[in-house]
Length: 389
Ligand SMILES: [Mg+2]
Image (cartoon, rainbow, N blue to C red; front, side, top):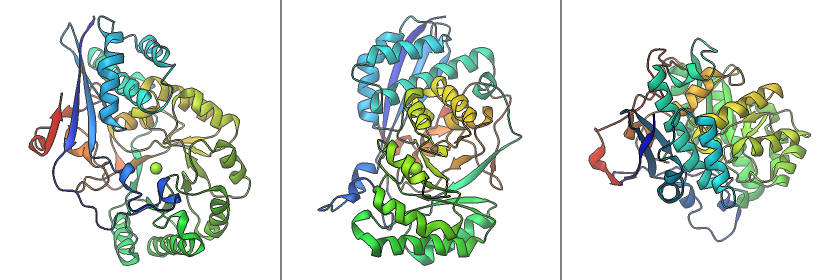
């Protein structure tokens, strides 16, 4: 079997976007003079890649990170490396792509491009073997996948309270909120961030997990004080308090707090996660399979993490991550972005693909009999996208 074609499609959302009251700390919001520090972190486009074989199998992969650049990397650099290769040689092909781009790649958009292709290759493998990807990676490690509800974007305390109560009523036993007030607002902002956590804790009671997302928005001094003040709220974790390159500062922070620290949403490959493990920097890894190096690399990082007592709870629900969660004992649960109006970008998956798993009573199920990743392209919203091929 040989790869005959690699096609990229850039989906750009042209429909309405809900922006009101969606404000949270970002790396840019740590700087002065910022009128819209959210701007670089909103994404309303997504890359879909199709790999077709000479036997008629089509594998679908995707990349959410920087999709316009990712498209260019696949079209000009990676596609020629795959044509005429056997798509089932996933280990070899990952390594071929990684080593061919290592001079300018290693992380970021190049890894997102390699990941999209790796996901498509495993999709083909699943169709050829007539097995879902999780069965090819180790099979079922849990009867169903527990999820936590990832939303609570608002800074308005009444809305926060109403949303949190609603998610609990829907059966979710975990939920994540964002830090609404950036580093530049100092102590007063920290007080407001604490108030947000307090409102959610008082709303959901002691038996629901609360996760707090900082989206790389703080520095060591702020994070250290913040964690001390957060101790009474029994957080499941504090997420990405610092920039991803501050591995040494994450390791220092861990010594000052009992709150589990999570991160890795913006880290790449087994090498990046090995550095985090070596420094004992984090308690929870949150790679996204469509950035970290696809299924090929995600599997290796799960093994490393499990061996070191680090949990893997990937960024984003989305089928490519759910297969990893289902097939690994390192992974106790998945993130769940529900289908909503387009607001920050994570929701777009629901508008592009059919087959995404829907949570019921806080749990997701994967079908043992659905081969590959389990996604097809959706027609319903096609007229709301500009699609660049
Ligand atoms: Mg995150």
